[in-house]
Image (tube, rainbow, N blue to C red; front, side, top):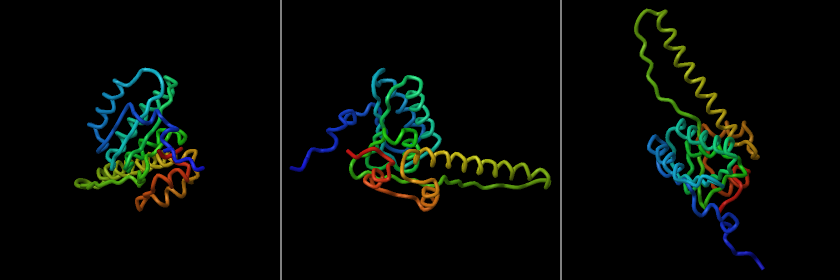
Length: 191
């Protein structure tokens, strides 16, 4: 006899996330994150759910770092639940959870891509004064690449995906479904 019970019964804590984030990853989402965290239980496992098409990767890193500190300083279990779309900055947030603490709902899609930069460099003045302006922009790009690579390493840590593979797929926006994420070991399970 085949078990037809939904997989969600294996993870009852995921039914009622403590922090539910939806929309653009930006300062407004961060404020919602902080407000919901203030109202969350002070003990026990915390469940963070997100559905987003992306946004500011630094805000995602900030929220993720706060989750890490809860885990490390308070010794609390933190679970990630991706719902519908976990794109770009949403995947950056997901990277702050160990793979065995990540879950997706059925039909959820993840998208990982390289960071993007749009900038104009205006050069005017004596030639020797222009070099620091160009060097500053180059340093910004180099540091952004380092941050991007740290994020790639975090999102694949503990999975079957290699760093080379994510670096190869990210430039063309790597989309994959929940089942593939589970099969690659990027998440523990699908509910």
